[in-house]
Image (tube, rainbow, N blue to C red; front, side, top):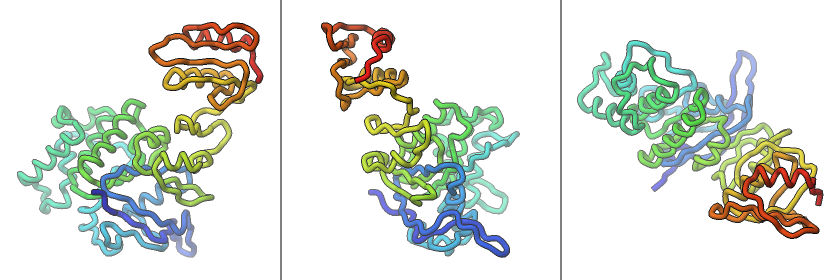
Length: 339
């Protein structure tokens, strides 16, 4: 059963100078639960990294409280905190002459003696952490020979080896290609389920966060902190205005953001599923607003995937079929419907 791991009350974050205080964000109230993947979203400069560093105790808060497992973060010693929070930073881990197993073993440092000697139990935890991220085939590899995606998996294994109930990650997919981004986000989601840990990360990968995260934290300077499931934030309109800017729009039908095209005409598109979505996408890319809610005499039926045909219903002629989106576009663009 999920339980509250982190609670922030009236939290203000920022920086203290010698004679002034710069407040980045003020009066935040929120909770984070165990067994959930929570993604922090926001434009550059809004304070995501400041919030993450403050929650990680890397920098002091301006005011308010941060409770972790019911205890104020200021009441933890540094030693105690290292057994409660583990952090994976954005920077690439550039180490040489060290194997994956040795690097993951550094996650046991809060529990080892002065010399960092690993016990049999420590080695078992290290091996289990490597297996949890499904990197068993990498355990004897030198870290500097790994790809960026492999290296990030190893850094997550190191955080797991630290055996903390909370893992914070700062832009964990920043340097990765798209397949690796997806793999890391899916890995973190799976780990939140399998381990029951609280996993909280900042990211610019908006589309992935909306598809994989259990909870979204949206930071902006106007509305402060908005929190909810991706689906609730979509339905209540929060996502529509969050990244509202020229050229980007939130598509409520798909629950994702898309490039906004200038529409010079519109037509009714009838159907469902992948064929409908792809036809709609192609038409909108070509300046035609298409959808089930559009009213027009000229309309198109997409059918389902089992049927390769698209049925075109012209205004003054009999319906006819085409067999690809390319054919469909060629006809529609010649007609230039404007209904």
